[in-house]
Length: 635
Image (cartoon, rainbow, N blue to C red; front, side):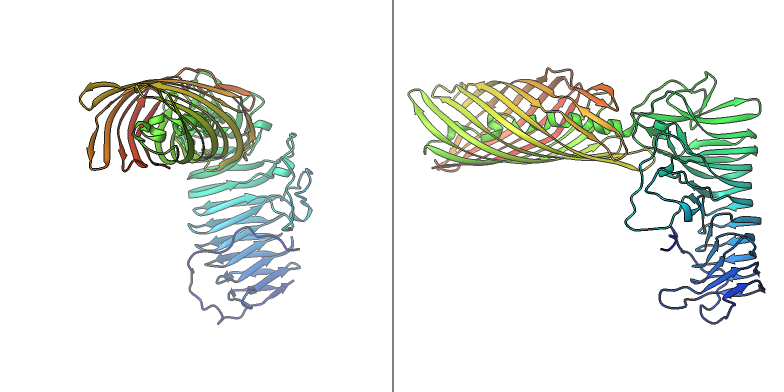
């Protein structure tokens, strides 16, 4: 089994030596070599390696172009080494003294590796620090990992440094889940650290619940740190500055969707003295930790300063990072929580959009003059923006197809249509705060429609739906939380209206409609650990409206354009959603105005087409464009 190296080699050459023209000592065991250039490939897949062991010393060497220098034991060292493009220096054990890593070069520091003198990581250069003894790490258990005990004397970073756990690699390994008891911290020591727009990324060891502890004596410059926290288990990486911190720094915090079980703040940085400032790099200057967003606050005690994560400041005078003045209490939902509520609210709108009115569904049935059976099909496009003006906000774009057929039963004063139909729609749900979802709706049902010769009609529909939901929330750290679940729903509607002649071929066609939907419950967990329970939910909608229509003929064709004006109301105010056992209410009650233009066209006595375009606007929903178009054939 071979040690995994987690990144390798990019950039541009520093000195420009020819890749295969210079010889070097490959086995530096107990001897000293100087001024060698380690470069080139031994074969198509194997780098040229200079191994240093048994107290060996290499002085003033340059490594580049897929060459590699390996310091293999505690008694060996590399002095004044330059790592250029596609070069690699590995300190398994031992000392690297005065090291320069240029653009495209990489330095790996393992186990008891040490850096003395200066260590410069220039822009485009990378360094990887293994903070665990990779030979003893078993990621399939919760056993704590032994620390790597890496120490660095003086470090200047303009490139990228990653501090992370490593292990003997097997492609079939499964990681143990993070235990609830925090393990011992993995410590990396840096005496003097200067950031020159560089980035240091700390990655915790999850199977042992072991966060990083970065111990710095003096910190200066400007740059960014990345840390991992898990407030649900009250653990996280910690940066401790024992002496003085000056400069301006950013902090990117990664966390999960699991809910913290305590309201205690988590301290992530301590500086004994200095005027350094830290600000959050996460989206919206907040960290998604479970249901709520956490902000970075600072508190002073004498000359020392602590930076902590919490939903609100602990003390009245504590300062919020990325903001002026004292912090204020402002509990804001996390992006994942908002995404969950968005997805829970969408089915109600989808069911309403699919069913709609009789005119939108099948056109003007009074134009049918022949046949005692029929088939029909309708396409729907509905683009709506929904918001409860509190927690929920999303854009829903629905595309759907409905196909049905019916049998006509003639009566003394009219006719009765008995029919069945099936439907499918796909909704793209885009969350206002980032992230998206998809809902595939499979439906089928039956309808009974009575058309009286006087112009009166009554339409009843019973429909069942299966909703297949997928969600992808965008966390403030840039990570995502994904999940999928299904729901079943049943909808019943009753609509009635009549036609009132106004003048010649002009008519008013008022109607009233009531619709009830029952949407089943669902339980699921996002990939970031956020647990959700959606209760059974109800929707009761009423709609009153009228059409103003006219009719004219062109040969056998009859055209009937119309304008529509209606108002609808959602009456149900309570639909419960539990996120990490915290209850929320999705309230989309309120009024919606509907305005539309439509056209029904009887092409022949046996065939007709129809279309309607609507605009809808209410206090919680706006539909800039809704389109229904279909055809109907009698036989």
